[in-house]
Length: 117
Image 1: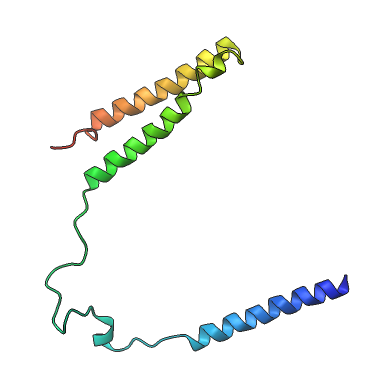
Image 2: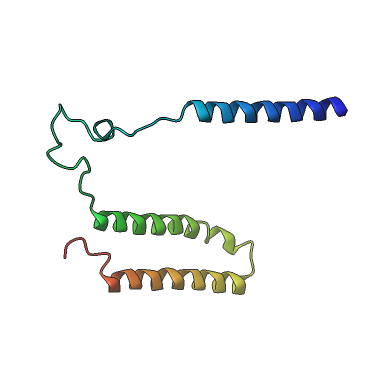
């Protein structure tokens, strides 16, 4: 048991020393303004490298993913009717569908489902 403990401590100590050593060796000095600026054939860049992103598209994609996952939760509901209590199944299903409908109404009311303004 003592040999296993000694080997584990030695392995942890050795790996820590190697990590500290490589961190100190690999630190770079970026004091040069020219080296830290973007390079485009020696000239200043004409425009931004980032493309415009439609936040409207992103919002609709997130809403789609939320409702897609909830559809996957709704699909097994008819199968579970036979194996569960009917009152509890109706209560759980009704509450789940009510939450979905309220969420859909909220998104519709906020105008998130309209593609163009």
